Amino acid sequence: MAASILSIGTAVPPARVSQTAARDVFAAQPGLTRITQRLIHAAFDASAIDHRNTVLTDLVAVADGEVVRDAAPAELDLAGADGTILVPSTGDRNDAYIRLAPPLFAEASAQALAEASLSPADVTHVVTVSCTGMFAPGPDFRLVQDLGLPRTVERYHIGFMGCAAALPGLRAAARICAAQPDAVVLVAAAELCTLHIRSSEDPQQIVAASVFADGAAAAVVSARSFGDGPRLELDRFGTVLTSEGESEMVWTIGDQGFDMVLTAEVPRIIGREIRDAVGGFLGEDRPDAWAVHPGGRSVLDRVESGLGLDQAALQASREVLRQQGNMSSATILFILRALLHDAALGDARIAALAFGPGLTVESALLRRTTA
Image (cartoon, rainbow, N blue to C red; front, side):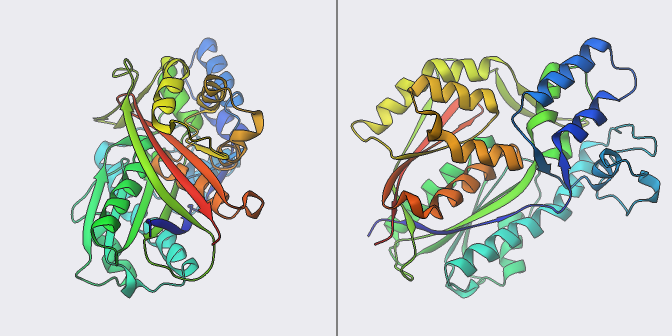
């Protein structure tokens, strides 16, 4: 039997901010030119995002009109008492990641195990995915500790591969199951993207501030059968580097957080090259549904037009973007969870696409089955 996703669990931090409130905070920062303020309004308003979740409780307090000094202690001092966005060091931001990411990994993973009717003792392998912080022993180690997994669990971590990394995580799980048919693999992705936002006049930083959010998701992958619920069979995977784009999507470490370069060329490159990239992967297969990582609304628009898709084809992707924003690697698992639980799909072929630095296009073909 092919390896399948048996369940997907999700988790987000409790602080939630509306896009308009976040926009107004960023536009009100001191020293910004009118041109920059207009850019902020344009980027936030065009994002097709309604709300996002974040670990930045003090920033949400400012957005909600509260006085930060009277609010609960912040997880990271990012907002001053007057609403000014502060500039913590990379070390302070990463310290917050070390405190806050493991509980989200654990919450999403515990939900996934529960929905698959499995216990922590059943897990044989762990694959963790993240690009917004780093420490060792890392998230893979913490999952063993926090969930009480067997101490003999094999652990792997995929780090700093950006928004596309969950699909290589699932690919690794499928390869493990092919080699060890009794394996039960827990693939968990968690990203705290908002730890790295800042006030800036740089259009690329403005775009990053307008779309990125925090969240976690975990999938249980196995070739074994556990119950009669729907599953997503992992048929095959593909990866391709576009002919250009190495400098258009870049993720580096600076002194004041991780620096994201996300130029306007990214959706244009995707639009130009997506048909060849996906056509070579799919061959004669025609998906019934699509799960496309929403790097932003323009990325979805370019994929839709480049592949000649019906407007309804990316509904699940657009809905996750609207409700949660771009949670980097975890986002594609949110979309796949929605499709897994969409009874109206029945037995269906699903194409999943995600985009990462390089510019890399990661693909997967899945089959939703209830048999």
